[in-house]
Length: 146
Image 1 (cartoon, one colour):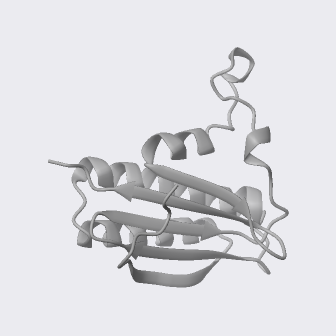
Image 2 (cartoon, rainbow, N blue to C red):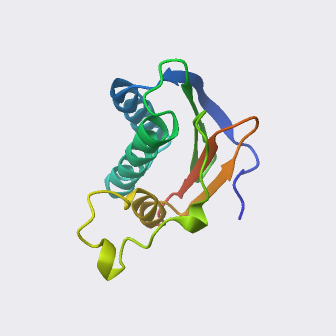
């Protein structure tokens, strides 16, 4: 998985509070970056949905709204890609242990589809623990060939 394109330019590198307002703020920042990078409307929608879901996971499940914990947002753009890194300061989790949202027993569940949706909307997704604690999710979207 190539998660870093040569010649990538960092657009954003900041820490956000563990609030739902930060989810909106991050989505706005990411959408502006995607637009400036020249992504088409359909891809912009996918980027926005994935980024929003990832931020919600970081705030709600990772940091658990803890005001002492931050969410780190980094966005960079390459010639044909947008890379988004979102990390929390939570206890972390193992992505391979997540229940299958398409399994019959999970179809009516109110949660558990976030990572599934993120993977569906983005071209590359990497989830890994960060030191000393927390989880970083790297999302990569490649420009559609028109």
